[in-house]
Amino acid sequence: MVRDKFDRLLWFVLLASLVALTFILSINAPSSAGQNGSKELNKAMDREMTYRARVELINKLFGPVENLRTNGHQQEALLKLNELIRTYPGEAHGYILKGQILGDAGALDEAISSIVEGVKLNGDYVDDKSPLSRRPQIQRLVDEGTKSIHERAAASPANPNIATLVQKNNYLKSRLAGGCE
Image (tube, rainbow, N blue to C red):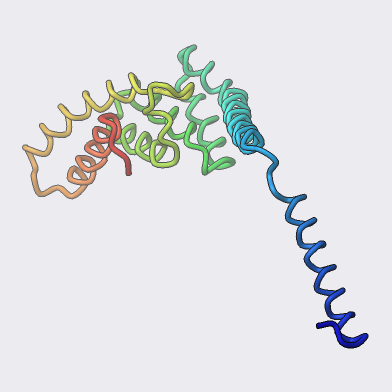
């Protein structure tokens, strides 16, 4: 089969390519199923650490607002909160806190709207197992809102603002019942 130098060279290049390919595949292949499991464990740990760091950051950023709220300084808390919401518009915690403060002040419509914004940004606030959960407060607000909104809707059924509010309240009800967006 091997007839001349050119044929020998081709066979040598082919053999060297096969050896190199085998070597490359053996280096990149996982040696056992345990490595895959440890990679997944590392990913899960990374996700958990990231989540915990996020919770700590939220507590650090919004802690002063919580202190103002619990000490009865609602207006100051709202001012500080609006500042934080402008700085961190994608953070749901600001909207949730704003909804709680407005709900405590009796402004149910604005409170429900703010809570909806927060829950749309991060559904952990209605999850019982989350450290960010505000489920009991949201449930209380939805229950109060349901009574108030349905009374007003019955009084003026053609009001589009009330219809929007009913939709928002129903959205919160469905999220509390375990529904998703």
